[in-house]
Amino acid sequence: MATRRSFLATLFAAGAAPRFGWAAVGNPSFVAAAKEAAGGFALFGLDAHGDVTFRVPLPARGHAGAGHPFRAEAVAFARRPGTFALVLDCATGQVLHHLAPPEGRQFNGHGVFAEDGALLMTSEQRADDSVGVIGLWDVEAGYRRIGEHPSGGIGPHDLRLMPDGATLVIVNGGIATDPTDRTKLNISKMRPNLTYQDLGGTIRDQVELDADLRQNSIRHLAIHPDGLVGFAMQWEGEAGAATPLLGLHERGQAPLLAEAPLGDELAMQGYAGSIACSGNGTEIAITSPRGGRLHRFSTDGTFLGAVSRADVCGLASRDEGYLASDGLGGLIAVTSGATTPLSRANCAWDNHIVAL
Image (tube, rainbow, N blue to C red; front, side, top):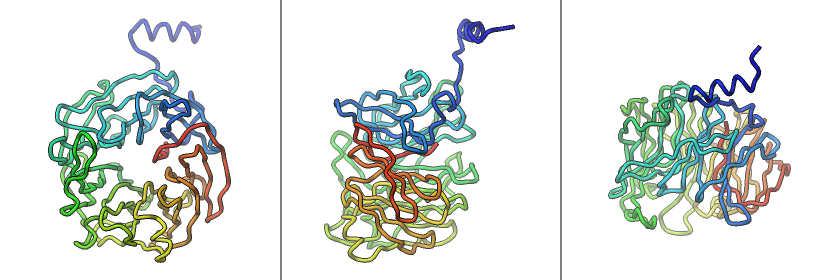
C-alpha cells in the first residue's frame, strides 16, 4: 500500500505539487490584509470566531484579496495604483505566482475568480488616462495573462460575480488619477457608473447617478443572493455635504440611494469604506473609518441604526450579521446592532475582509 510520503514523492517527482484545499489551513471563513506592529504587511486567514488560521507575508501594503473557490490559494492585491498581485499557497506560505500588470496598466486593488476558479478577473486601469480594464488570467495555465476588455468607465475598483455566475458587475469610480502619487485629476468631470457585463466583456446594463451626485464615487460592492446589488460611495465634492453613501440596484430599475438621518449621514464624513450583506440576508451595512461608524439598512433602504467603533472599516457577512475589523487590531461580531468582541491582534487591519 502506498504511504502518504511515497504518494507525495511520486507527485513531486512528476513535477506536480499537491493542491491543498481550504481544510488544510483550518477552513478559514475570511481573508484580510493587515499592517503588523513591526512595520511589515501580511495576509491572514480568519475563522468565524475571529481567530487567525494562517499568515502569509506581503511585500507591501495589501488592499483586498480573492480566495480560490476550492484550493487553498488566495490572490493578494496591492493598494492602487498596484504593481503586484501575489498568488499565495495558504497551506505552505509559498508565493506561487507573481502577477504584474502589462506595460501601461496598473492593478486597482480587487479581483474575482470566475468559471469555477478557472479564470481570474482583475480590476485595472491604463496608467496614462485611467480608462478601466478587466484583466483575464488563466488559472490552470499558471495564472497566464490571456486578455483584457474594457471595464466600461474610468477608474474601476471593486468587481463581483452575480449569483448567475455568468455576469460580472463592476464599479467604475469615475476618478482619473496620476499614476505616481494618486492625485485626483478630474473631480469636476467625474462620471462614476455601475456596469454589468457578461464574462466576454459585452455590456449588458450600465447605471449612472444623477448629475448632482456625479462626485459620489462608486467604490465597493455587496451582492445579495437574490441579485440585489449594494454599492458603497465616497463623496469627492464640497466638504460637509450629507450625501447618501449606500446605493441599491436591481437590474432594469433605477438605483435607490439609501439615506441615514442628517446627523448620522454627516458623522460618516462622506466616506464609506466597506459594504456587506448581513448573514441572514435581511440587512446591508456600510462602514466609515473616518467617522468611526457602521450604518445598518434594510434591503429596501430603510435606515436601521448605527454602531460606533473607532477606525472601523473591514466588513463581511457572518452568521446572522457581520464581522467587522478596525485599524487597532479588533474584530467584532455585529448582530441586529449589538456588538460582541471576538479577538484583538497585534496589527492594523486594512480596509477589507473577504469572505471565502
